[in-house]
Image 1 (cartoon, rainbow, N blue to C red):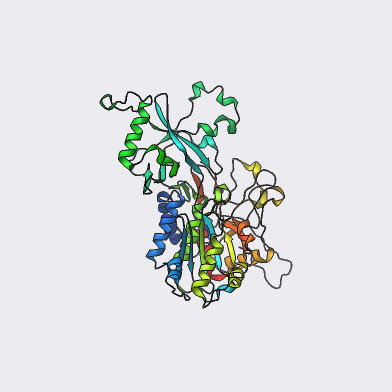
Image 2 (cartoon, rainbow, N blue to C red):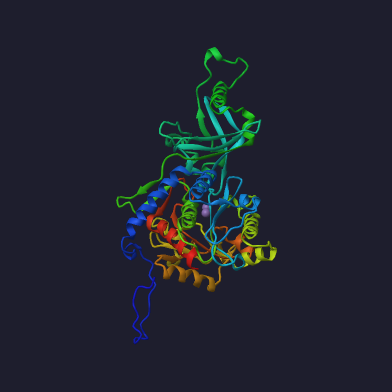
Length: 482
Ligand code: MN
Ligand code: MN
């Protein structure tokens, strides 16, 4: 990313490292490739709004490209060789895609890991109730959201319901052309004297994030005299007819309320993307695409790990703070090596290099007060590398070593990747974490590297197209060359 050339004879001349938009530095014909990639990504964003849908889409793409199920390979006692491709999945939510390389697994793999869960509103176990004339769905928010951003906008519902008999029904309503949508109300400005005196956090309580889903009572001729909430009864009858479910089935369901509508190009110049859940599908998609698209046998095994539960602390068996990755490496060793050895698994983990592919932030002209001035990410200035995250005093950061930063930097510079080094914001104004520290716990070399967003965690987040494409290019360079 150096900008001025230094003549050997002129020892006093220095190279400046500028943070600037990357368009002029794209290679010959690269802008067309960038546009093609972003069009695919926008489609992906529009159709995979939950971790389950991301997962099933990635597994489907992998199968189409000849990836085998690693667990089936081991059950059948088959052996893998360089060039073979496998995936390993758990609970329909977390997946590892790998392309086996030439070097032994004991030397480690090159891994890029992102997450597929996004901030949203989950339905509670008893979600359905009637108040006044309206039928509503009670929600418990998932991840860090600003409550007020979710009001008075069209919403969709996705998820699964497991019926009493164990059968599963999938729900996807609000995004098809003739689907109805859902909505959370807000008070009109004419009557908001009390509300407007409160802080933004207190103004809309989490308990007020109730989703309007009906208002029509059961008709007179099917009226159940004993039931007070006739509109709720009507909704229950509709749900039984459509999905074959009873009210108790909500207890064994995962239903997620997300913004309705497609991701779109943003701006007169179409240089940006507006979409729900770009944290972290913008990085997850890039990582998965790199493993799926590479069409040669890599030196080191390359892998994309797309996990769940990052937004609520990486807990749970589908989160990064689980045994999934270590178990998957063990399965890989069992499938690749003549004899399985626990020592090989440990060696593999300790020699694995990884990018924790999660989003960063970009300087917002309206909120300059939170900027870490010269160290703030800038939109369309390239893929971001964050040596550390966390809050003030680097609290909670895994803090990558200078040596590993140098390896990542070299892989990017040698392969035409436009990138920038950043931190989240100025020390003390807040902070955040990623999956990096859980990888580091396994002995893995890891650094945070992802796309900077504007209005992260809002229902509609903004990303730069150049940055989105550089994630794909950068992850590919790292996996193949680092
Ligand atoms: Mn994230
Ligand atoms: Mn997040």
